Length: 122
Image (tube, rainbow, N blue to C red):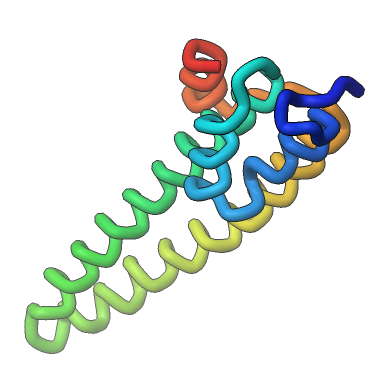
């Protein structure tokens, strides 16, 4: 594996792009000037985990609105929003681990939609 312009092996830098999601993706995207591999993973990290963050915020807002409805709203909020939020969290952790592992192996594994955006901006 080649070294990135940051002096780190590309596979390690690619995996680190996912470590703290949007934050490390942005840092590596701004600092890495040469490696398309690292830039791809940085953009994909920002898009995937930024999208998940926005989805969780919207879900919380829906939960707050539902929760304001007397009696039935609290039950709907707990069942619908609570369960969906838990499923998204579990799926996010699994995706995070898979993306880090694939990047470490030197693979350019594309998440649907996010991978296309990442290719365009890498």
